[in-house]
Length: 303
Image 1 (tube, helix red, strand yellow):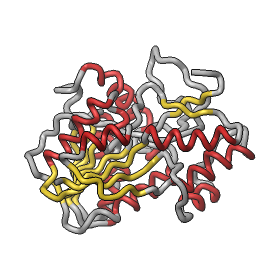
Image 2: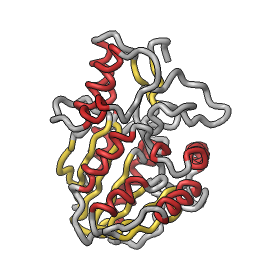
Image 3: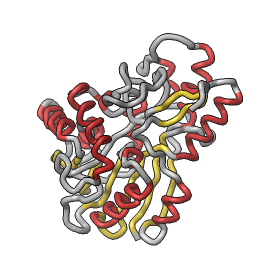
């Protein structure tokens, strides 16, 4: 990595210490980039050994951030916006799986908005512990919610159990493309025929588009951290073609990233970002243009 690179964690998005695990290289200042989540089943049951360091990373982060939405993405403005976008593809009465639910922020957001039966799974027990605490504090919900430890690569649910499966910055925390493909096949298995797999993730292509724009303005290149493996749209969706039809790509963060990760750094060069600022809130709700948003929603329908 050159001195002109900024390490970007699509899961941490600029946390105070970057959520780093011991014996890992220290990244440069990360008040720069995006969010993420992870999956699993019982602490390490049936989890490939190469994913254990990533699971431990999220287990430690779950303990550190507890009930805070920042456990999965410190950019709470876009985290909330993402939940609204996901809700638009979910119907009343459906059974939904949130794979990589972290401490349940979005899971509960969806249950407040829609009368659904939603199950959240995460492979970090600390995440599920705090998800249940958040559930106990959630107040009235339109839907019902259950949280449990679970592994996206080996889901403990019968075939054709869910109308929708959602995942948010979970697949980029599966280490490599082979694990991402395995998760896609598990989503296919547990979905009912015609069910939707809603993938809100970062892709190699999205990151390249944003970095090219930043470079034209003399800004540093953003690179993923050690536990992030961005989706390769071409490879993953070519693999998915026999199982899913790609119905739509919802670019809900492109304008936001141009205004907050390209233009904003031009006039704010020091200090921490305030993700709840009027600038960020306005940017999140403007009409979309271009394909610069790291976070995109891919809508796949089971064949």
